[in-house]
Image 1 (cartoon, rainbow, N blue to C red):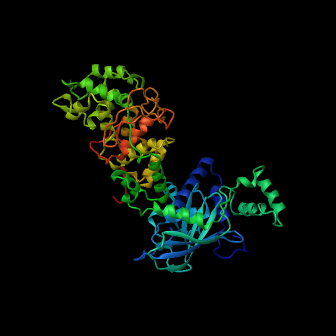
Image 2 (image 1 turned 30 degrees about the vertical axis):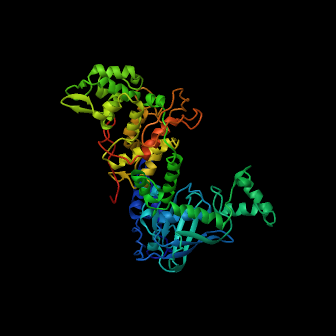
Image 3 (image 1 turned 135 degrees about the horizontal axis):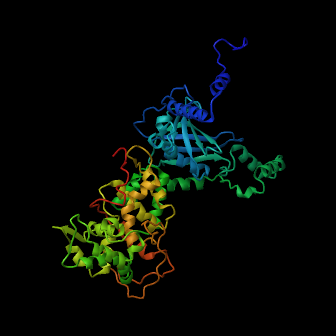
Length: 562
């Protein structure tokens, strides 16, 4: 320490240099890992304690908070004045701010209570991704607005897009009583357009504003600065969102209509669908799910023609005929004998989907799934070592349309595991809505929004979601919902192509069907599949049996609070 230093002052730079001296790259990497781990445990920089909780008790009665939300660093200030119900959770407040400023919810975000958004003394309220990444803080969906704002002049910080770093200050201006006409969220005033996404932050936004105003004395310089920053990208491509009270409040009204307090009955959805929507913990995920359900066309009549039904249920019809009136003697282990497995593989074309000789049921998954799902659907039963037709199996054996309806009304396939139930239901919704890109990832997203996680607390992955939905997807593949998979894979995310119109005379069956002509083959993709899925989705839902798939059961999931 030099003579000029204050007593007790530590030269941090010298200490760091001393700690790094003589260490190999591998040792330095280990040291960095230890420092980052210490930071994560401490909630800030190494040596700092975790930030104190800044949450207070929730109000016993709901009031209206009038808040002003300012985008920091803007001159003149860019702001919105919003009236909010005090019992909104922060994930809902996030939705409101996104609407009020014209953001597209395309980036990560977070809230903070303390001296500022960043800092060791700030308690962070995390978006789902940050929670999954193990960041220090409290999930935003567990924190109510009245826990972090109590009296006028209290402030809360909100940052959107950690790259562009849009920092907002939410200042409580007034606490007002609720009235019969009070909305959950309403914008009452504001100034300036909302910034363009991915423009580079506040500095870039201010340049765009000046460059877009030929009357501004700095217009020419701003145009040159933007050209230097973005090259040939024109200002017109950096779309700002004009400030419009009507537009903002219209969007907030729509948000409120499907907000997290909406009861399942309010959307007119039956039990399992209503429960699934109700389980969504964020309004944004709920809105997306409702839009997909709407795209599935559940309010349209369910149509099926005889030729389509016969084509779709052929594997099950074949199996029912194979079992016949006399039944099939099973092996000692309870499987189909090799001769029947080989016949199924050959006559149903299953040999192309699976590797191996195709004569041992436990080693030929397509045949195993076909037989087990036929039992689960109540078409077959085991008794005294025999595989027999049930009364229902005998009734629908020669009636493809009746068999089609029997299968449709029992989808998704039964499971006692609620996570598997909801995964199967989500799969039906996505395929019926023709939203089949990244199926497993999307299912995982909705399950996560319903608070599902792996038993050890880790977030659900696309792979875990795929395994949870495997039973339902296997049946969909067997009835032609998905294109054939590669040999040995038994899994495909490619839906079937549009079906050609059937020349056969149409016929209907079931509680919602009538004798109507099939739609043209160039209409919606795989119309016959979507009819089946709509028939499944409008059913009240039953959950008998349990699910199985190759490689064992999916990782155990849990849903806190249940």
